Image (tube, rainbow, N blue to C red; front, top):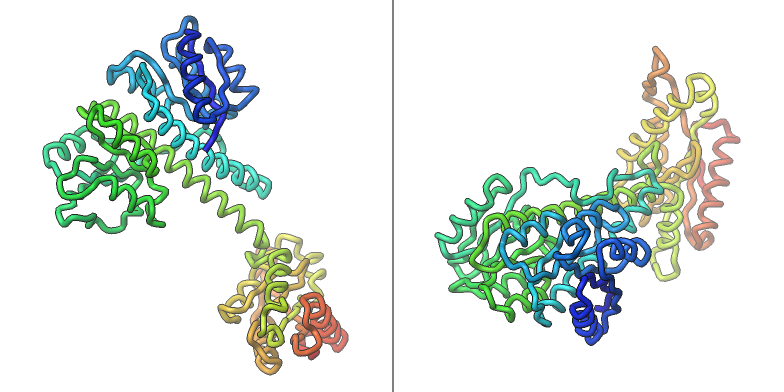
Length: 456
C-alpha cells in the first residue's frame, strides 16, 4: 500500500536518507526542515503519515505533534517520531504528545516500512469511518468533537496472553487503574477465555512456551468478533524479525522487553482510545443508515426504502413475485385531527397507528410510511384471501380502540381505509402494484371510508 509521507528533520542528510528509503518502496515523499513548515504542509497537503524528528531548533517534535493532534483537520494523521533518544521516558513523552510510534536512529529499513504500512492501513480505515460519520451528520447525527483524544477510557478490559506468571503479575501491576486485566496462560495450547469480543485490548507475549504467539495474533485477526480489537505484542529487544512479522499480520502496536511501566500504560491507553473512537464512529454510521431508511415520526421504513424493497421483490429474477400482495392505507379525515388538536397530536396518532399495524403483521411483511397519513404494507407469499383477512384485522384494531393524545382530555376515534392489490399476472412491476393498490384505496374512500377494498 502506497502513501504520501511527510519527513520532518532539520538535518538535510537525514531527510535525504529517509526520502531515498521511502521512495525505493514507492511512497510519495514530502519534506520539511522545521516544525512551522511541517504544520503548513500538513494543513495544505494532508499527508497520510508524518515521520517527525524530535530534536529540532525552535519548535521541537513534541510540540509539533501536540499541534497536529489539537487541529481537527490533522488530528488523525499518524505520527512516527524519529530520534536518537532511546530512553523509555522519551518514548512515553512522544506517545503522550500523540505520537503513534517512536523509532530510534539509525532507522532500520524493515521496521520502518512495516510500521508505515501498518499505520497507513489504519488511517485508510479511520478516514473511511470519518467520511461516513460526516455523511451521517446530514441526517442530524453528530458525536461532537472529532478528536479521538476525548474518548473515555473508563471500565476498560484487557486480556493478557502470557504463560510466565511473574511477567503476568508485573503487567497487571503496571496497568494499575487503567484497566481490568484478565490472564489466559494458554496452558491447553490454545485460548480458553470466552467472549473475547468484550475486551478493549489484547496484550500478547511473542515468547510463549507452548504456543506460537504470532499464530494467536493471526487467529484473532481472522475472527469476525475480534478482528477490530487492537493487539499489543511484547517483543524481545532486538527481535526485528518477529516485530515485522507481527505488523504484517495486523498487530496494532508493540513494546520491547524489558517493559517500561509508563510506556506500557501510554501505549495501552492509545490503543484503547483508538478502538473506542472507531467503535463510536461505527455506531454513528449505523444510526445514519437507520435514519436513511426509517421515518422519523413513526419509526417505520420510509418511502425510499419501500421502493427499493418492492423493486427487489418484483424483480423478474424472483419466481414468487406473482404472490406479492400490497396493502395501501390512509387515515380517514386525518386533516381534521391536525386542525383540531395540532400537528404534535397528529404525530402521536401516526406513531400509535404505526405501532398497532406493526403488531398485527408477520415478520416477513414490511410496513412503511408512504407519505403524510398514507401507509403501505408489503406481504410476500400472500394470496388475496389472506391479505384481505389481515387488512380487515388491521382496520378493526384501529377503529375499535380510541387513540389517547396529549392535547385531548378524551381519547379520539380514528378509522382507516385500506386498498389491496395482488401482483398476479397483471401487476408484475412495483409501480403497477402500487397503482392498483391506490385504485383500491380510492374505491374504499369513495364507498364511505373505514373499509377494505381489493383489486386483483
